[in-house]
Amino acid sequence: MKFRFPIIIIDEDYRSENTSGLGIRALAQAIEAEGFEVVGVTSYGDLSQFAQQQSRASAFILSIDDEEFTADEGLDPIVLSLRNFIGEVRRKNTEVPIYVHGETKTSRHLPNDILRELHGFIHMFEDTPEFVAKHIIREAKSYLESVQPPFFKALLDYAEDGSYSWHCPGHSGGVAFLKSPVGQMYHQFYGENMLRADVCNAVEELGQLLDHNGAIGESERNAARIFNADHCFFVTNGTSTSNKMVWHHTVAPDDVVVVDRNCHKSILHSIIMTGAVPVFMKPTRNHFGIIGPIPQSEFEPEAIQAKIRANPLLKGVDAAKVKPRVLTLTQSTYDGVLYNTETIKAMLDGYVDNLHFDEAWLPHAAFHPFYGSYHAMGKKRVRPKHSVTYATQSIHKLLAGISQARIRRPPSSTATCSTRPT
Image (cartoon, rainbow, N blue to C red; front, side, top):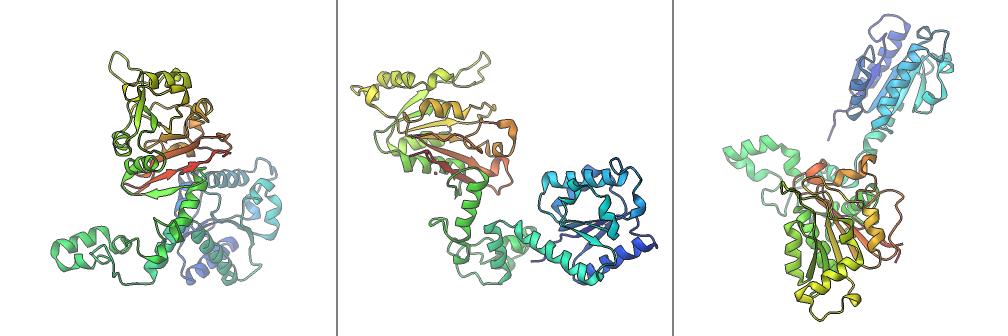
């Protein structure tokens, strides 16, 4: 599939008839002759808005000449413009190729902080436009391939092959919709790419969700890296299903489990299905009836043991000998209540086997320093020594995921996305 990612050229002489204008237009024509689109502009304009183009550009060429420099190199307007523009682009995109096009001596005027961000300096008239165009296009193509995550790249390759669909779903790549007027509307609304991409998990080229191999397995490992987990597993049917998977993996009948009293109903379903015996942590509530956080005292092992002794379903059980199998906490309630996960891990490490944070509404926390340790897994965190940490997240809620897409992340302790003990 051919994507539209133009090469953007910025040169105040782009439409001029001087030497600089003729040179940069010759390069633009050579790029277009190779089948790449070129967008030429004559000024940086609003830097913040223009830098947004980094998401739809395959490369930037910033063309300047010696006449644009003044005597004061430190505060030179063109240097300041270059620095500000490159800074805006790199703030969101560290990989998109950026070139400076100018006379051979132009590079002497550029400070090191600008030069180190460039993919190259193009010496005006040093090589033929055709040769330079091929070099830039090669880097642009390499960049576009590098931004494709493993599964999406495999899906593109599969679609490029034009393979017939002999498996479910029954619309066979959208063919079934072509046989009726309303089906034609449906096909035109969603487009062929969407329908051809709707394939069965039996397509070997795309890997297996159950075996975690191929492109799917590679994508899961890539997601684990991004979300600071040891392992990450893709799941359909939302965090509700993910929560049940964590429980079916960790909990057996008659296991004692510690649960947020205002947990999601999928946790209540999990209690019923596994046959576990719950003790509940009670949150606060104000006079408006708004549910607040669970007090820190509720997380103390002594407080949990007191709840075990008071539970009529655990009559006769020695609370001091009980080791709860899992603790599940709603990490970000509908009202935005968050807990310091590192504090909870420190309090319960070794006492509760598995710490499960239901982060259905918090998948974005890993991408902003504002959240600090108020989410389950982050960079350079101290691992629990005994307990395994799980985070279940709904990508479809607050990240750019298709409906019902979610992940289960287990991190490790020292001893699933999840992290294990160290």
